[in-house]
Image 1 (cartoon, rainbow, N blue to C red):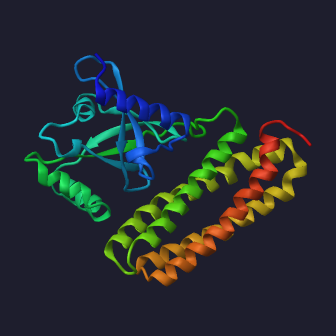
Image 2 (image 1 turned 90 degrees about the vertical axis):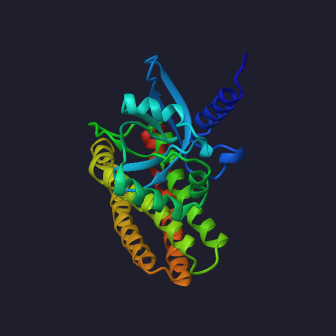
Length: 285
C-alpha cells in the first residue's frame, strides 16, 4: 500500500530534478536540497528533500527537526551510520561528509538558524529531544563542478540563474521585513554568504579555466574575454561594497548597493550568455 509521506517526497524529488531545484507547494521559495544517504540497516540509498542553511564557504547546515516529532528522521540515523552523503542543489551534485555538531558548537549553529527562521525554535519546543544539527562538508574533487546540465551552454545558464535567484531572495527579504529589524539582518547575511561566495568561486573558475580554454581555441574571442574579466573585477568591488553595507545594515545603504550590483551583474550575465553560449555549444553564426 502506498505510503503518503513517501509519495509526497517522491513528487517533490521529481519536481526538484525536473526544474533544477525549483519546487512549488510548501517548499516554494525555500532553501531545499536533495540528500541521499545510505540506509543504516539496509545499505540502500535513500533520497530525501531537506531544508538547509548556508553557514560557511565549505559547508551547509541541515537540521534533523522532523517537524518537532519525538523521533529523529530516518535520514539522520542513516548519516550517523554512514557519514558520506550525496547532495543535490538542483544545479550542482556533490559528495559530502556529514558531521554531527555537539555541545556549544551545536548550540551556536542552532541559534544562527533560529535567528534566520523562528520555525526551528518552534520545532524544538515541541519535543524533548535535542534536535541535531549536521554540517555537510563538501568533499573536494579535481576538475570542474558536477553541473546537472546537458551541454556547457546550459551549464552556464543554470549557474547564472542561481545568482539571479539569490539576488531575488535578497530583494524579497528586504521588502518583507521592517527596516532595521534583526531578522532582516540575519537573512541578508545568509543570502549574501551564499551569493557572494558562489559568485567569487564562479568567476575565479572562469578566469582560470574556461576563459583560457576559449582563448586557445577561439582567439577571436580575446576582446570579449578581456571585457568579461574586467567586469569580474568591477562586480567584485560591488560585492565588497554590499558586504560593507551589511556589516552595519542600514536599509537605505543596503538597498542602494543591491540595486547597483543587480544592474551590473544582470548586464554582465546577459552579455556573457550572448557571447559564449554559441561557442560552448559548438554553434557558430
